[in-house]
Image 1 (tube, rainbow, N blue to C red):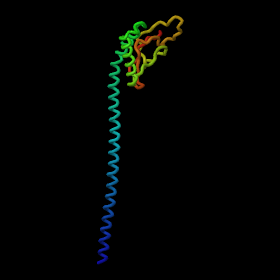
Image 2: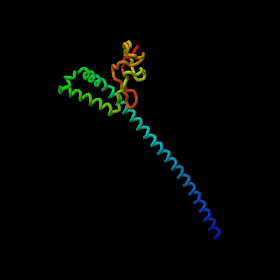
Image 3: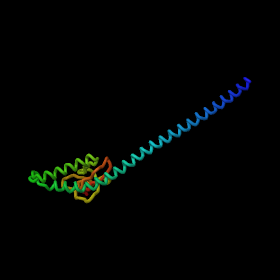
Length: 168
């Protein structure tokens, strides 16, 4: 009878051992699946944040592009203002608005870039005219001689090309 009891105990032990191995295998599979799902979720979140960021940058670019002509016109008015008129409170207020707009653009990542005296670069410049070289100026052909409209970079990327006149 004891022999029969020992055999039954061995069977039960073997069954328990098999059940334990099966449970361990299932646990490993479930853990691996959970880890993959977690990694997929983290990747999705990261991609979604990048996508939302690109939409925001696009919207910001559009807004800044619409604001630039306002600043251009205010800067033209500033250039036409005589020194004697700069003491006028209304003129001072307008000059302060121009300064605030420039600072706002900088804070948003939009920076003007220099063009005068540089070689024409079609990636940054838009030629709107050619000018005969100035007498004794020594400017070589293709050099920017006049900036008609200022160009801007937004976060290191071209926002608006500069409109320039170049030497023939």
